[in-house]
Length: 284
Ligand SMILES: [Zn+2]
View: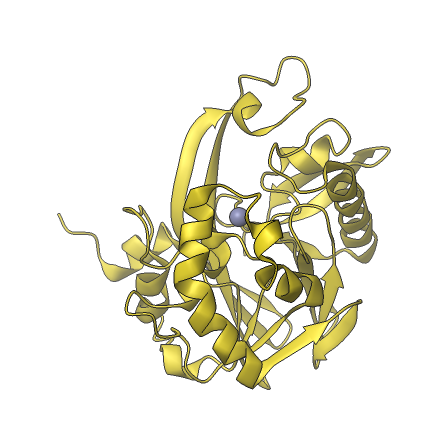
């Protein structure tokens, strides 16, 4: 039996309100399950074999000032996906032309691939872009890019020229924490990648922190000192960023969204020791 639209969307998207903001977490493919030790350099004893599944994705937020996307997902440039962000957005009648702003967490392909279509045209023709200056500089630094795998470089060669051209016309760069539009703050959390940034939403007393890849799985918040993503650009800085964001989210009572967390993809942190937190999904 063909699942109904609602049932299909149930497996790929989750909607949650944050005050006046209407957030839609959309999933876009998955990797794994694979043992924790494949992705983490120093897994705690007993956890190395824990199977981990990572989902890619993006988040759409309808605000009183317009429609915002956090990142763009994988796009159509590589492979089959179990969840397809473009379909998830279309099912919710989110047309590409209706997106007013794109907030970029970092430049890995699963976050920016979907910002450019297969034909080389930007996917969201009316959107403004917001990103950290360090990422912008990285995109103009061939030497730094050459340190990444050839697959990543090939994909960047394909999508960065049209993306950079659009950002030159409609982009805003920031260096430090700042308000990027009413009630939305950019919070640099460096280490995972050049210019990696969190985005914090606050409305009517409710708060939500989108942490991008600062923690790709909730276990990173439970063991912030022990766990490192093998390919973090700067592991120590990434660890400090994780500590910072977890302490801040817990102190503020903010909901936390991780790009790669399994659905619903949004939850709350509870302290369980010094610099250690468990993440439990929110169900509304
Ligand atoms: Zn990612």
